[in-house]
Image (cartoon, rainbow, N blue to C red):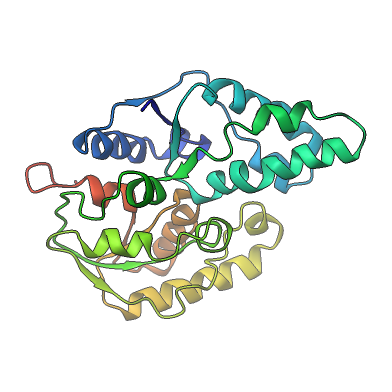
Length: 251
């Protein structure tokens, strides 16, 4: 199986350690991972801001770069949702506007083989115990795109529950949005800040050392709120926890 890592813009620019963790994890499980150097933005920021036609070349680019692979793995529920849910909508919209089926045909091959990391681990590789060791107390925040867009369900929790040394604590109001929402945080800053503060208060009430999520865009917002509120808790991407072992602990 040829597997490609779709890192995403946010991770490439700000959180490269998450990408390294995905590669380390998958290679430990016997998967050879390739990183196509031609990958760029998936177009989510453009599409969600209303520049839908401008996102189309990026969708075509994604299909061109990743089309040859058997599986495309991403550590981002939001970008995974862009490919799986919104690329087909873009193709249908182009058809409805009389611009033909070329976009729909271009993206069709990559849509079903794009997986968020936990989906790939549980559904494709069939594992929940990935050999991780992380002796911390952790609370898990299910991000909106992962929860509602991709329907990740209990996959992330099952993976966390199998990590040696990890104590998983329930997050009150776990399914409530953290307030990021991409440009929502910019356009509706006061509401976004209030939602973030609610999320952090609930997280702090667990007494956990770490707040874990499967999307760094949300963790960026959560981490900033933690810093402002001076909460003694770290935001950590799920991939970095799963990549951590007794021999190579997470720094």
